[in-house]
Amino acid sequence: MDCLFCSIIKGDIPSSKVYEDDYVYAFKDINPNAKVHVLVVPKTHIDSADCIEESNIEAVSKVMLAIPKVASVCGLSDGYRVITNVGENGGQTVKHIHFHILGGEKLPVKLA
Ligand code: AMP
Ligand code: ZN
Image (cartoon, rainbow, N blue to C red; front, side, top):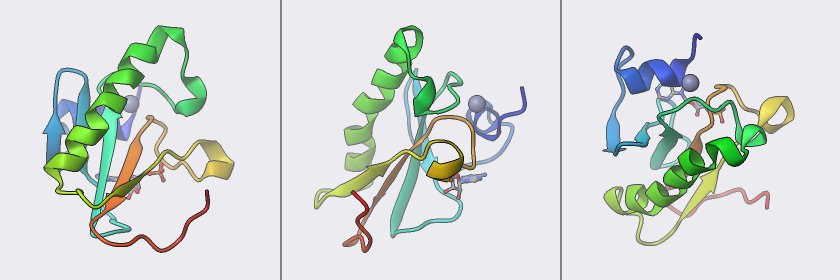
């Protein structure tokens, strides 16, 4: 399978790592939308949040557990936003589930 984030996790494509454990990889977004913009992904491939199910919930949970650690590493003590885009209407461009962590400044647009 040809997946950009799987290639990044394998190290075949370079990235700016900010956090890694046995289950999770986090790296700087190449096109940041805030002063801090990091992507947090499971090391196992899951297409999107629409594919979360019992069989992959442990991998998803590990990502959830990593989010506050990534935020701490990035110095986001004043708060941050976590976003996951899903599918066409959600604006998802990379089909490997990922959670955007945005912060480092007061974020402008609030959709939810
Ligand atoms: P989404 O649009 O929610 O699927 O998010 C995909 C994100 O991946 C976008 O914010 C892109 O800027 C980011 N991205 C694409 N290619 C790379 C890359 N090689 N390294 C880091 N981030 C990337
Ligand atoms: Zn993948």
